[in-house]
Length: 261
Image 1 (cartoon, rainbow, N blue to C red):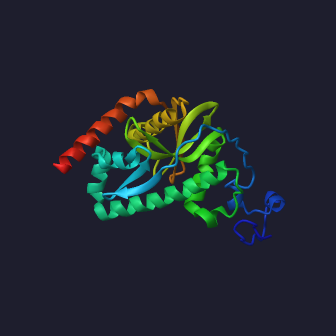
Image 2 (spheres, one colour):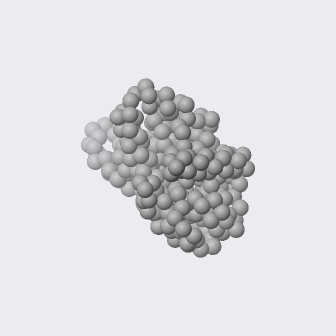
Image 3 (cartoon, one colour):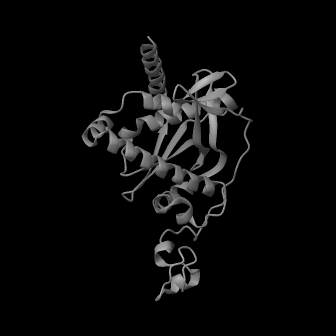
């Protein structure tokens, strides 16, 4: 028998493998065994904004001016002690290389998740997204199936009040509650205390969505899959991070003023 996914010849296939014409390794990913159909919901129209680079930093052209990206703003602030210690221990070259690999891994995983949530066929995943991203998707899929009534995927948002912009991964219901949903990948699973920036980022998306559509979103959901084989869903309330977001904005503006002067 030849596996219809990886094309590997299986000399002694199991009864299950014969039935679905998929080898044991591919059937363990369960990607061909079910694919949920997600409902998509209309929402008020949001003005399109263009992503640009200004002074080497990501910005967005909005109807009210060029706004800094929320991701870029948070990255400009001082690193957490743990991240700073890690960079010092391994050196800048190794740290930068690891960050680039993480970025590639995250992009591939996001592409797979987006395809799934858009109800598009999930075929040739390992060839399309790579082995690592496919494995991370498999870990994440049970949590993804808790999503429904999707408003938007990869939606660019901005806040005139905060003068910040960015792109949210997903606006949808999670377990029946309207949420800002972010998809994260990691080498090792992180704990909630180490992902404060993720909650701050999602809090901004929640506020921007409400400003643009009038629809309030209180729940924040971070779905994380790690190469160590773990998957976790972190759920929070935006009200717990509004103060942290405002402080990050103040710190960024102060740092920018110091650089100018």
